[in-house]
Length: 152
Picture (cartoon, rainbow, N blue to C red):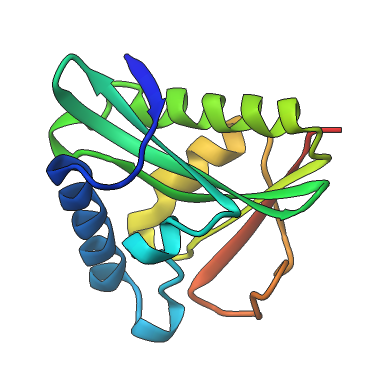
């Protein structure tokens, strides 16, 4: 598996982001969908990666800089055909490693509270992420679970 910085212009990654957004809207009410579209993912404070095996897109993930000591995990998605192959685990390892390399003290994320998001919450918990209150511009939302990891 090769993880590389992605400019979000390839057809495969555009399709995966569209799949990600459809999935978020399928499982969450519109006011609780915090997934970024392509233009949001191209903002300068966001670094976006894709995971590949040869020419096959496996998944993606992003890191948003909230400030010089705090980052946010964004857009974690595994291609439907690649589920349960360790893609998300490897992508999250990559994001945590990069956050440490940047000198962040904390890494946070928002995910859904519904059953469809349970595998993601288990993955994050296995890395040591713990539930916390809203951070950055988020507000309390019964459809959201906020998690954070101290990496200092």
